[in-house]
Length: 353
Length: 247
Image 1: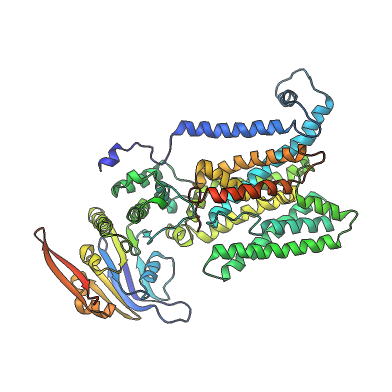
Image 2: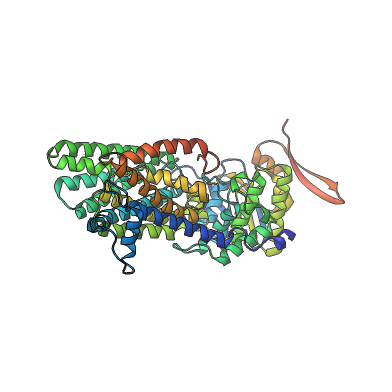
């Protein structure tokens, strides 16, 4: 028992102060990135002016910026930047949750079919109706339908749910991809087709405060619920029988988590189209910093995800004369980053099942 | 305390894995479950844990059960302390996370097994013996009255077998913990258990004190090879062990 008396009180709790400083620093980085992103684009605005415009809302100061500066920052870029942060944090939290709940670091919202389902719902909404609320409604509905299909398929096949889950995701994704192709085929090539195609490639360019008001509540609420159940995600990540033996209602907990993930993913798809790879790559980056414990991983993924999508959206805006679709960049960056991670982090960040 | 009356289990319409098993395991006792592979040892444990429902019969399990699996494979390299902390899950609400009291309970459990020094090491890097002790600590952290272990010493070398068995004997002795474990080694039953349950498959079983059940005849019937109880002197004590006749 001598070991017990000599051991400091804080085993497993970590040192308190530096940890708070670290989180504060990470939030500050996100805030600075967001402010910086307000100035970036075809119409560049210096950081001082952006800062001035922001501060003028809190304290009255002399304007040293033009009216168009203010319009661009407040009406065009502010909703866009907020949507990028929201989508990044949401998708990253969703990805981290899925990887934990399914005990597999290779799953993400895209791989298990939620994205394709939601994309089909959105494309159908554009074809039949117009307006963001229809897109949101159908994206969520078909996102849920997709995950329900995947879950049902991987359950009846029995023994190896993780492998079955990923395979079922591939099947469901292919099915919805075919339906999307069908919609594109029947869509009016002058009007609906380009709208569907550009929407699917992913972009924050069409962000407005109205759109934000529509998708922010579901994303924020679902993310906070997942954040609140982060310890439960740890327990679920030990496996079904383990978690049940520890007194956790596995089925109910997992469905609840999947429901939250679906709401987040479908909402992001509704607002910005398919923004792939974020939910898969960002949790890995976060895991390299804070380790596998979901109590730290979920908030860390949220912060890294926000910064990640902000930077990617900035690149989309300035890399070429016209905007590059977001989905293209996330895949161009995400795929090689993920390939490198796969090779480098084997055995340290996570292990094969 | 565990009380089983005419307990039976089978999957669907398949053959009975075990049937008509009646036994009473008193509070504070250590019971070893012996039997060849596939005679329902683990299935019985799962029934006791409430993971599966017995097909027939009555099973009363009094108190909180703590489960110690044979091994734990997680794709995520959690710290050992975090693994132990997860033993508190049943006391932590859906949207809550461990409080200071939960941390204390986990630390306490690790201290009781003298493995506090492993707290910050990744669980998957521990030796098999250390992992087993950590999993026992995790069960203790749940403040269980009944410890259920699936082959706790099967994959361990002699020294670690002794360590794990001694830890179990000490815990039961000090705190009145009821312990049930399955094993392929009858000498584990002889070393720490007071009672043994021999599962022959179907509705054949023996239950009673270790001395009365772990006999040459019963073991030979159980494993279908010659088995001998041996005793010898060690440190002035009479020690009993079991040896299979392998040639």
